[in-house]
Amino acid sequence: MGGGAWLQVGLRAPAPRLALGSSSRVLVRCAGVHTTSTSDTIHGRMGDRLGIRPLRREVRDLQRNFPDQFDLYILGLQNLQGLNEAQLTSYYQLAGIHGMPFKPWNGVGSDTDWQSTSGFGGYCTHSSILFLPWHRPYLALYEQSLYVSVQAVAKKFPAGAVRDRYVAAAKDFRAPYFDWASQPPAGSSAFPSILTSSTIRVTDVDGATKSVTNPLYRFSFHPVNPVKSDFSAQVSRDWPTVAFLSSWYNAAPYSTFSAEGGESQSEDTALEPFWDKSGTRFWTSAAVKDSSATFGYAYPETQKWRYASTAAYQASIRQAVTALYGSNVFTNFVANIATQPQQLSLRAAATPVTEAKEEEVGKKSLVGAAAASLKAKTAGGDQKPLAAAPPKVEVAEIKTGTVTPEGPIPAALAHLAPNNTYTEYILNVRALKHGLGQSFRLLVFLGPFDAEHPDAWDTEFNCVGRVSVLGRSPETTACAKCRGDAAEGLMVSGTVPLTSALLQDIVAGQLGSLRPEEVVPYLREHLQWRVALFDGQERRVEEVPGLKVGVASTEVVIGADGLPAYSGSYVVRGEVTEGKPGGLGVGEV
Image 1 (cartoon, one colour):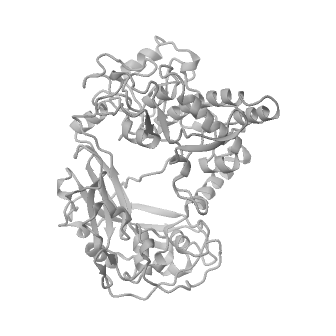
Image 2 (cartoon, rainbow, N blue to C red):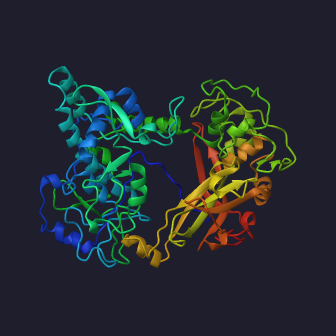
């Protein structure tokens, strides 16, 4: 568990489920037995001029700064959702690719006895190397279908200047994305309100601004009760409307299609059910490697045509990533607790360490960390400090993603990384994916917490992270791959970074440094974990099949540009977790 840490990464694109198929079927089709119309092929929407491709924009940016395209997005999505559900490119059919009703799409896969456990089980590459590349042709299919709807909607606006404006906006339309890791606009929630509101205001095709049903919030089945065979008895058909996010997660968390047992997967494995532009072959990971060029889109940060060389373009990407998400753990920590992060000059924090207000006590985020109490907040009241307080660190202010005048590490924390080198700590988790027959989370705490209320563990101040395992019951799921993975005892893993939380405790005076001789015993004393189901109930750690929790460390050097370089060599700290329920013992890996 000390090496290859598995990182959970936020995707910019919507995350539908993945597909693969047996090699024999692919060979027959590649030989030309299958023919398909161009409307069945997946090509994205090119529409670029002289190499300039329209941009996919963050959905809040689209709403604020490109209102015409946002109107078209909402109205076009409404139009797509309103198509006959028997139509191949209807929203219903496209959504069905990643789960229910578990029917073959576009003739890919046998539908013989598909309702039985031995029949067709959908398209799924969860826990597979095909997981990410499969999303590229899937998203291209969704986008090209939405693009057609947007063009149709634009032509319905009143003739004249208004229609011309919307037709022009439609030409460069691309499906937006939600970047959950970006800083939300001032005064707004990190989760966009447009995803939680049942109605939304747009300019409709009659030219009037009005409230319309929000297609990002819900999808209405039509007919209200789908064909009985389309859904299992476990899916309610009594509600005409299903919340969009709820249906996305619950009705289709596993779009499933199992490969032959022992079949190897590579960049040349077919990404079924997605035909490429030829109509005779499936897209592969190798073919969609440069998805921007292949499917004709770009993001604001990936406008390659604006740069004279590949090196300059790559440098701009590096700079953009740093500006958006920070450079290293020290500058990010300071930026998150600074009261005025826009200032580049360093100064000592003027506010003394005080007890955190009740309304500020949430997950142990870095926001407000310098003001965190030296006293641990518990349901029973204040307790004594966790350790004798070392000298307090004076916190500096710096903008995220910048290099300070003194170097790549803020001066106030530089002593924690002599020669720009420090020890990084991570918690590794592994467990049987379907061991509990349902989804569950492992929550990690660094310090005391209210153990009696598992439904509120996420909001505990000392909660430093969580690993979610999206398990399923093999007895009830229609997902063929899920059943196969359960039978084979598929193990999954996740990580929780600990260094930022340790910095917070250093600032609070509870820990002196990041040196292993101090951190390891500190973690041994204060690190805890618990397991909770998604309904808020606790499950004993000992009851989770295959669960192992361990801590590992590695040396990190921060470069002159502020970005970290990891050594690649990990030390398993079994002494931290040995003897604890589910804990990795000394000598175990």
